[in-house]
Image (cartoon, rainbow, N blue to C red):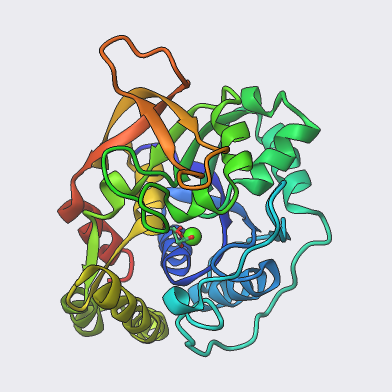
Length: 317
Ligand code: RIB
Ligand code: CA
């Protein structure tokens, strides 16, 4: 039996974040020490509300504290949110029962610092949104780099196109300065970007399978997934010509944090572009034979997508 991994999930709780959180709370191989929220798909208060409601839906067998984080980028003016991708409430306009707990008064960056200290090198961070909270935490205590075991970052694109600009992925584009600080910090980073998440698709057929086979206690979760994912599938039909399917950006990142063998990583020197108007938020990898520009991070370049999606579904069966 592999050791249970202790994780903090940092999320801008939209449709795929919600599924990632549900999976993490169902997985016996993960212990979710807390969830921190950040602006992104929706504003930080909606992301927090969604997170609290998702925790109730998951019926987790243990307490999961939620800490509210940044409501804007480090330096740039706030931009709009992604209602066209995630719906007005961030979860595909699905209605969920009111939360049964409240968020902490402790801020997200302080929560991350405290848990990293308490867990003494055992903590994994899984970031599913902008890296603003992690950048704030590093500004308060740069020694955080030595206290966190690994950071799995959903973000970036190295050998594939961006999804919000020709070259930038949404989570990095939404706060490039924060991503730059985190990537250059010396934290042990695994970048789970569009190179692998765009190959890991959930389809309506998978949801039909879940509807037939889910455990009775997961029936409400599956009903929620069918509503929220329908919204997501429609966006990906219009944007990417997918048929009743969508990429599992955030769920794959949680899965990789739990079972690293699902992705193949290559160490690359990466820089986050912060200057150019056209290329802001690009994760520039130095792919030359003798790379010298950027900080070494592990970049996921391949994925066993079939096993990843199978593992994702199995959590509810
Ligand atoms: O680019 C995909 C990422 O942007 C996902 O984390 C999605 O939830 C949005 O935050
Ligand atoms: Ca996200």
